Each structure stands twice: as structure tokens, then as C-alpha cells.
Length: 173
Image 1 (spheres, helix red, strand yellow):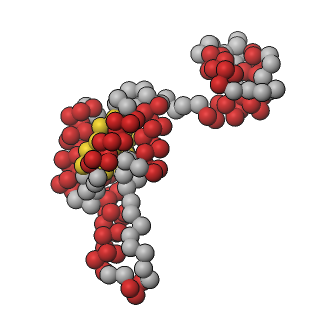
Image 2 (spheres, one colour):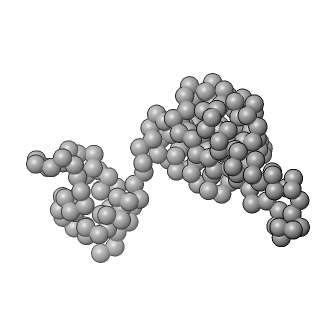
Image 3 (spheres, helix red, strand yellow):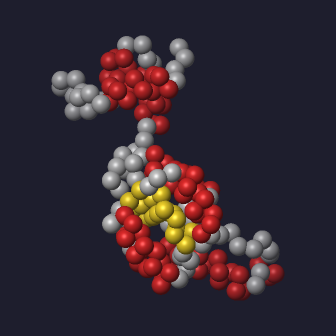
């Protein structure tokens, strides 16, 4: 059989119903049995794709303007969360926020600067009223050179962003 979005919607509609008597919750075989014409393996795959429930949650995603951060932001928003993208590139973060849609704001921040992170935290709290989730995603690879060619200040910049940044964000929130 060929399955797709229509079958996924049918699976979601079953999950909206109370489980059968004697069962605390739905599982793959029960859903397959309830639908009658859907393979249990497809049900399991579909359930793994389901959204997580983040309705009413507010998240901060550092480095959320692109890459993994953007993907995390998109998934959180699709799951019902509001997201503050904290990024050093304000115009790019604003563009990303606009593309993802409502419930996303962009805040310029240098995660290696405690005062800047506290200011971003305050702006996020003003916009959303709370912060439930922090994703420390911001990071840089640094300059692509051998160790003996790498300038110490460049190395320290990598450590400030990749190591100090998550600590500072956790401390501030």
C-alpha cells in the first residue's frame, strides 16, 4: 500500500480520541487495528514524525538565523512554541524570523558578552513573558589554519563563543 499525508492525518485523528477500554494510551498496533488498512510499521514511522507539543512554551535559540539553529527554530514554531532567535547578525536573524513567521523574534547578541546576553534575556522576557527552553546552538569553527599558524586571539575567540557562550547564556537565564 501507498501511504502519505492523508494516512498521517487519519493517524493523528485516532490519537485525538481516547484509547480503547483497558489501554492507558494509544500505541502502534492499536492505531493500525483502529484504522484497519494501515500497516503497523507505517504507523510507527508516522508517529516518529509527529510534532512535539510545545504549545505555550517560549524558547531561545542562539545562532538561530541559519543552519541547525534555524531548523530547531522551525521545528519549535511548528510545535507551538514562540522563539527568540539570538544571533550576532541582526539583519539575517530578522530575515529568518520573518520567513519562519509569527511567534519568532530576532535579537542581536554576542553570546560571549554577559551584559549583551542579559540585555537579550530582558528583551525576550519583555516580548514573551518567560523563557522555558534554551538551545545553546551558537558556535563558530574559527579560522582554518594549522595550530602553529593560528593566532592566539583567533583561538580565544572560538573558545569565548563556543565554550564561554553557553555558560554565559545558562547563567543569565
